[in-house]
Amino acid sequence: MAGRPLALCTWRLTLHDKQEASAVARIFDGEWTEWNTSSEDRYEVMTRAQTVGIILDGPHSIKFDMRQWANGGLVHHCDGRYFLSPDSSEGRSCGCPSSPIDRRALTRSGMGPQPNVTIAFRLASAPGVGIFRMRSVSWRFAENAMALKEEIGSNYEGVVWRISLHQVKVTTGVTYVKPVLAFTE
Ligand SMILES: [Zn+2]
Image 1 (cartoon, rainbow, N blue to C red):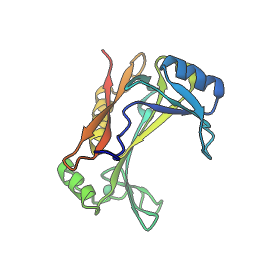
Image 2 (cartoon, rainbow, N blue to C red):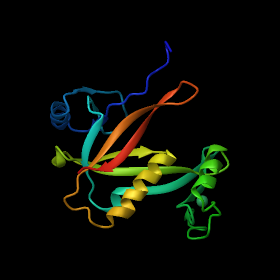
Image 3 (cartoon, helix red, strand yellow):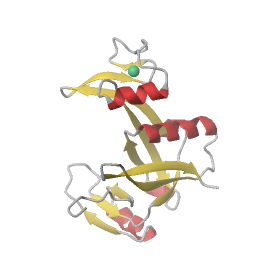
Image 4 (cartoon, helix red, strand yellow):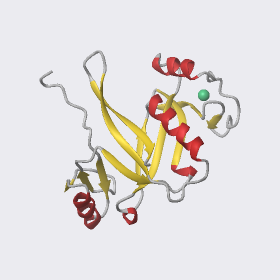
């Protein structure tokens, strides 16, 4: 296995404020540095945390859509049933299969769109620091997040969630990181 990069299983957070970066690093017993980026989040914090307690503002904090790209352009953008863009086809049936198994198969074959989940969250241990975002294109995470979104309805107040990173090794020996979203008890 030498030379094969191991998937990181601890959270890396990026921030635009130096003071906040150092505060977040202290909370998670991690280290902050300035990293090479063109984005405004100039500071990164490598934490030692595999699980982070988070707060979501409301249903809009979990966003799901499906996207298929070809030649650098977005050729299929939908919510699984209806097109979301371009404007000329928005709201029209997109033709994606309704069964989750068929959808996954279509994504895997490269013939169908890929899920795209974005979670906007605050850190439960430092809610004042601002809003962080994470994105995943995994079907498993999409189903996990959408099931919890349905379960919670509009009752977000006072709920602390947790999001953990798990290392998964597939048969080819490649490891990747699987995020898992849950409610804290
Ligand atoms: Zn579709």
